[in-house]
Image 1 (cartoon, rainbow, N blue to C red):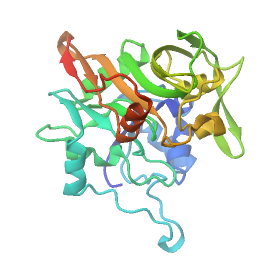
Image 2 (cartoon, rainbow, N blue to C red):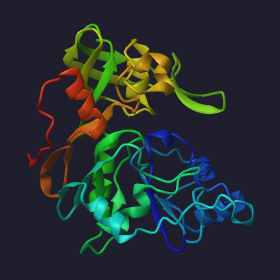
Image 3 (spheres, rainbow, N blue to C red):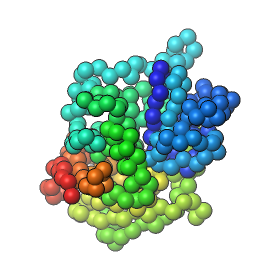
Length: 328
């Protein structure tokens, strides 16, 4: 890249050291060069100077200096494996704009499609962060990611249009002042039909992959859930309200109680599939209520993606899946 970049810390990187975050996302950046950037204030965390050992939190903003190549942009030998350009074409820009659920002077809410990454990473060259120029419109500042969703999770994604708004949303997320609701289809019907899953989680490496796992010594993780409808004993439509934001928390928690999210082979294995239904992950960020500048709140909800709508119809779940937006 050629200019300064601002990146938002996702749940996958929460509680990591700042230098390890750079090692993961910018492996070609030497330790000595990073230390120089930190020493001279070219790398900043939420606008402030930071140390290599500083622990980062979800929603914080990292300033990356110019001419630092991310892992998603580093070409292989002789250009082999070089990812396609992330330049936003007018067609891509129009597609992204068509997914806007809400827009004002401070924030944009998108209905992110399943399968689209929010930020770049190893082998990822198409992601929302690279397309944000398309959402600048008449604003002075380039939009910034206010939080993250997993690649295969669809639904409401907030984009800050100003540094103040982005910082406010990140702070609200960090202090659990937002209200987030997810919808999922799970295999089987949870018992009881309403409750709270309280299982600590920790990151572990298994067969070369980093997974979030149950761990007595892990970080506290709590998820409220409620069955909204069921198709006999076969599957259930569940509303989820995460009280914490651990990596893959909803997926791990539901698999742990024996009701994996439909399509989640990573945590649910073969049990996460139902013949005749889509094998895509059935997890959707349905709505978010968030405080905004000038003391107002906004409430945004997103309609289901096509594969989940088809499952709703197949299983005969109740209606009520349209999008809504309001100030509260």
